[in-house]
Length: 383
Image (cartoon, rainbow, N blue to C red; front, top):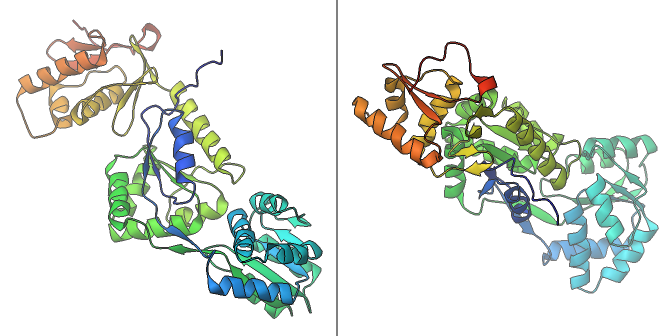
């Protein structure tokens, strides 16, 4: 029997800002305990039935290019599918098989291979700048160059190649559209700023830029930046191009070595596995506080928001004493009644399943009962 999959992301509220493949990404994170939330910053609008794309494809067939640039995997596959839908797939395949194919990264190369073709060169950095540098160094003067564009546009490739003497044919296979639910997007920005999200994930530069624009409109950028700098919020970008809008806003994201969703998931798992090794060791097990929940030995505990905030104060004290006044500040409302703190602690003990986990320190407040090796000096008498 296979060993059960660990839950290093147990209880993590992860905001997924992408439209395409968001379900796949959410499912992968859920298997490791995360709680995905979805608020796409942009929609992806396919052009499979677009008359312009069909006309451009006919032009490519009529005037076969010397060089074809495939900028995205989904875009190249979409181009082939669109050609097939109008009976042009065989002719397009024949034309492409005679051209020199340049792929902007491994995903584009994979789509080229899936179509039964071979990429002659691949930009491992997955940047249009590397594609331009390579082809301009080789020389494009007098050549016919067909460029399959991604949703963000040409990235300057068309202009640079034309200025170098090439005849350029552009093919836009999909484009970015407005967010599917603007209100949900704005709410996701506020939740991220307010501390209700543990991590937010971006899979495209246009999506990151659009999300940040909403954050600016909401006046939330400073709070989001502060949370990432404090380590209470993890920003994640699938690659360096996607990361750039975040970096420009002073938000430093976690970026995998390879620009793939699988690599993105693995780097997040590695991050939270390392965080788990820093968990507070208590007599009841390893304790972590997430944005909206508490996790004990990878098990999400049934606490309300007030209980989570009280536990956060206890964990932050690292075995030190938390006064009743601080417990009251962590609770909703503005009660100054010490009895309210006692009631909240009693409920918290019951919910955590180990009444010995939270100790009362006589005339001082409360503290967590840490594992013996973790108890700091001078923690105070408890009963």
